[in-house]
Length: 431
Ligand code: SAH
Ligand code: SF4
Image (cartoon, rainbow, N blue to C red; front, side, top):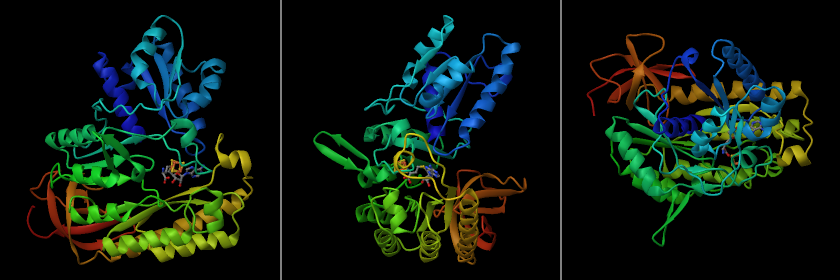
């Protein structure tokens, strides 16, 4: 999400005559784009800003700006008290950056952290940053109104709003023409995407279908699906199009109904398992990944065991796992007590991570002997003689470099695995 926002900022500023540099020491302006979903980020940002401030000794006119989620909450401390910043812009204020920079040019500080109800940056073609030229992101909606009790997003990124569907399809086509072969559609809850056009309503399943039709050679992924909203219509759409990747990220957060209720997730363990059953029926072989929070308010040992048992039942292919950290301006911070001791949170998180490693390894082992289609992404970090790529199920595969190029599809026979990476060899011919 943040990369996608930085790409929008780069586009707005390059249109205004600014240039990007990879050399931080030669920069006239440094922006730090922030996310405050989990703790510790704030301290990291403060340290980074202090380091950037030291550059001012050499270039006194250097402008330092803070963008994104953290802007509103930290502006007083970082700008007024610690004087680390010249400019602060929240996630809906990027169009005003040229004016804000002009204001800084007159010797004043500039702040705009007002959240919008309709800004989607739909008309802005992002400048791709640090891209491999093969995979890219498209932001299809902004904000969130689910108010999960632990989550800061509704307060930092504002109301949910969907972006014009035609602009999303056009951006996909443009990326395809530039040689990209994989795009990930991004939103906090993509399943509630909705765009009204000419009396017609385009939901996420229809949008996905339109994007899939851009080219069968363009792989499409999406994140994140909220379990309460993922429909059979969507699953059937994915089944119909081979280029809609067979990998669904479906954050469960906890396996305990008591925790799910306190988290305000609006589904039960049984509802969630029902959706997993539908995925298995409609999309056999589809990978499922998740997010899990360990040690949320009032979590008992039984609640924790329910999370472990749900992980075993689903057999996740991958997971992002976090220790609960209380965030300001959330329902949990206001109404619940962050009462699971730190060492218990840590131990539970370790148990969750260990179990997931075992499940990831089991899931990868099932691939051994299969021949799978891999989109080549680039040269492996470990060896110059090897490429790495991904399967439709989002599994990373490493294999010997052949005469093929990144961006091409290759049939690879899986010969071995670790819990993180599959190893394979070239099976047949290019698609
Ligand atoms: N919109 C997505 C997730 C956005 S945040 C969804 O609803 O699934 C990504 C993940 O960060 C969440 O799924 C959750 O697991 C984690 N997270 C969010 N707030 C957190 C907090 N306060 N403490 C720990 N983990 C948190
Ligand atoms: Fe946060 Fe819940 Fe919205 Fe995800 S769905 S961004 S976890 S409030």
